[in-house]
Image (cartoon, rainbow, N blue to C red; front, top):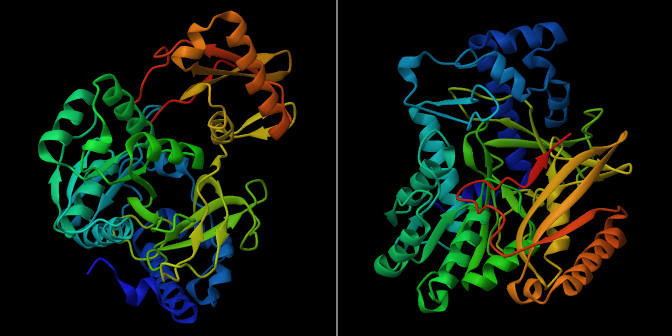
Length: 430
């Protein structure tokens, strides 16, 4: 049953007993099977007997992405390869991919986490789901496929790309659920408008989007353009893929599957734990994974945790939508700026389209930010004076809300490259 109310609605005290037991089991597992963690524990003088409460997790070493790269491909794997039934990985665009091996048990757990995600989004066995995430090493396509399969949905595995064909299949197959990145959802919506296809004439009613940070303004834009409810899935290759956290029908924060992932928020500079409710870097420890458990993995994602009642009935802790990533952060005039902050402010400007790129350059010793954003056709065609007025409006809005001066270039419609997967929002020319 995908709605696992035993876990998802469990009283906090019972849940934390399970988490502590699973944390200690995972420590023993990796200490026995993964030399990397055994050395770390020995260097820090930590044993499982030292972990007497969940707060003691802060005494354990952190794991970072370079640790996975340094142990590429399978030196962090805790089981022999004969027990590995699948391997996923990151895109590897900046070098060797980060690998993620799975045992059969891992696959079953991942499928349940994804099924919980989709059930919370309102997806049911009778739905026809169009999966426009990429299939392959990337965890998105097959992760969503497995969750929908566990729900016994009808799955249309279109994968990403061929946007006109995606729209044709929506019409012909009567798809009522869409899976893809939020930026690709906007690409589909824009192409459908060009094809004179009205989404209100289609049965599409809900989309589940993830794999990149997106603002509340972007969610609203998708919902309005497609006439659907836009739900979120959060995850990362290093932990399993999508299915780590999800939003419910309330759309007020993402529930973390706490029986599988122990969350912390820390100061990204000192790594000191922060109280619930304070914003910082999310750290996750996998509690049940067999092939490649992660101890205190630094996600680089900036968010905050909230322990509060939810109208959906789930008691699982919530995390806010990811504000940005510490490695995507831009420092402009001493102010920390995340791309999603700029996106949110652009969504306030009615004269522009939700297509933008941030260009970072050096100006002397300082970083300079230029925002390239597409104007709506009637605005752009109105001429240089109108374009200059809109540019000044955007510049003033960003200055008023964040306190930084940026350069604004209002671009012609369709000039910025469209995304079929994860959108590239930052061009670093430093």
